[in-house]
Image (cartoon, rainbow, N blue to C red; front, side):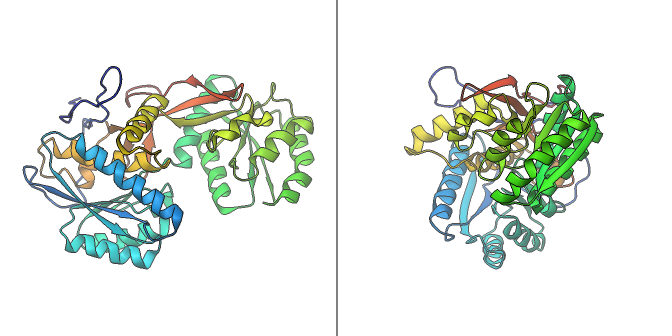
Length: 389
């Protein structure tokens, strides 16, 4: 396998410098489908689509994404990127307009938008100009063609966690989800991961997404999990939803966490206060490479004197991938054939690669909540040559 490494400046951090991103080519680059031919010796024009006018949260998110993108640009050596920023307002119609403005300004690739419907709309418009879109969404329903999603997907997370559970003798999996579209997508991702990893499907329970719905359903769920003989129970809910109730009430209803490992499909450390929840102690979850993610956050804070939004690293990753591919000197660097090189990239959140179906795969760590802290119990891979990739 041939390995392509982009030329980078060393990161200005305390301690040893780290090469934070690189492009690694697959042995077979695959078919070239969409995307323009570029002169890699010239300035590459990249458009960033963000929801600036979608309220206070949109302003913070947009600023973080732009800052992270410019931080990535500053790390490039031998590659010139001109970044233009366009407001989508988080709205599909405005996203279409923003994509059109980006194309009119000469954009050769687009990163963003954040929200799925806006990303889909931008992708439709960008396709008219034969331009690819690296969106910040994690919704694989919009992925495909010229649209890629950079956000961590349920499928990716479920596959990592089910694979780890199998290795720990916890491969008899029961799933608990709310009657909610997002959580049902999460449930289906876990079922798929069970099949892929050769695990055992122990069963599934659902509940009405309300406090009353959770409380009334818990005794039945706990009983069904125990009767199933499951060695692990996946909870698709997040810390801002039903998860805190489930984590506390299921053990009270007789589910023994020592016998049945509790696994969260969503992050258990966001917000940080969730780590102090009694019911989440000993639970497993997946997260991006903590070493690289923390280093990115530290460098961002040093540069901009503020904390980055949790999604900021996705903008860094998008620019990292573009810059690393341009550095190869390949005129097809921004086509789908190059973007989907099997070796992938290493960015702010660790190793990742874009897949031909528009989704992505990220190297995730497995962590456990212990004593109100995150304890990594299986580190994130640093390349796609290891187990599970």
